[in-house]
Image 1 (tube, one colour):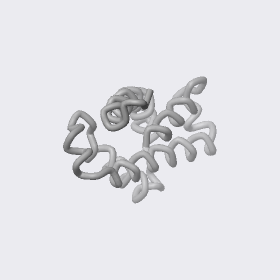
Image 2 (tube, one colour; image 1 turned 120 degrees about the vertical axis):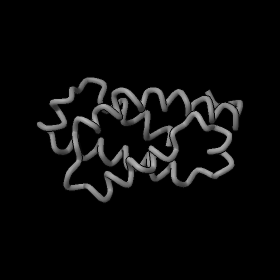
Image 3 (cartoon, helix red, strand yellow; image 1 turned 90 degrees about the vertical axis):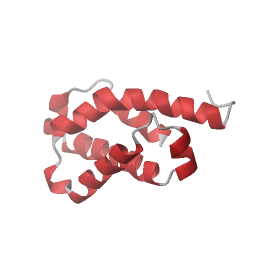
Image 4 (cartoon, helix red, strand yellow; image 1 turned 45 degrees about the vertical axis):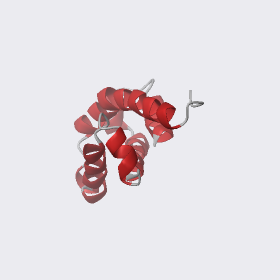
Length: 106
């Protein structure tokens, strides 16, 4: 989950919101990465979710469901907002969660 969040952030590093409309492959790749993050979140144990309530597990899984089932109507403004504003926060939360499970995680 953490790796795909980081990859989505990295993929947008030198890109803009307009690129989602102009580059279909970029839009599909970013959509898929966010879907994978949601799928991975759904597989996290209930115990781990309960110990990291700061992570919006339900919303992450819900986003995955919307992307999967609404593939023909992905709102690029919402997708860009998720990657631009929410994933960097999530990355920090996941790093903290991983450090609590595995102190050698950096």
